[in-house]
Image (cartoon, rainbow, N blue to C red; front, top):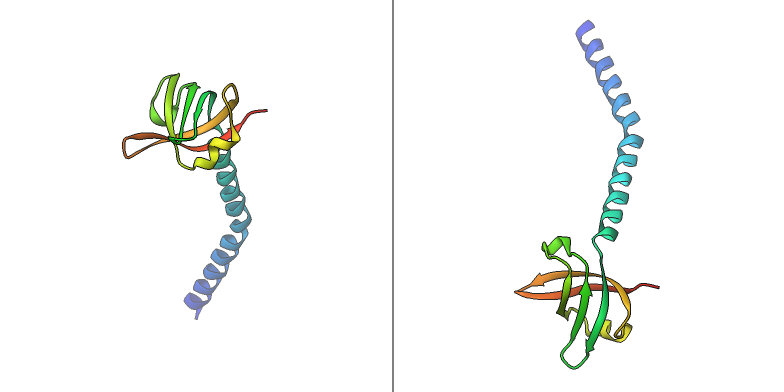
Length: 115
C-alpha cells in the first residue's frame, strides 16, 4: 500500500510540474517564432533597380551582399518569380529583396520598395 501511495504522489507531483511548465514552454515557442520572423526580415538584401525588363521577366539590380547565396555586392540581372513584381518598381527605386538559385537561375522571390 505504501509503494502505491508513493507512486501516486510521484505521479501527481510530476503532472503538476509538467503543467506548470506549459506557460514557459509556450513563451519560449513564441520567442522562437519572433526570432525567426526577425531573422527572415534581415535576410532581405538592399538594392537599387537599374532596369526593368517586363518582356523577359527580368530585373537588373545593384545589390549589397546576398548572404543566403554567398554572393558579394554587384550589379546583375535576375529573373523574377512573379512577373507582377515588375509593375511595382522602376529604374532608380530602392528595394529590399530575397533571391534564390532556382535551377541555376538567380531569381527574385520577394521584392518590396523602400520608402
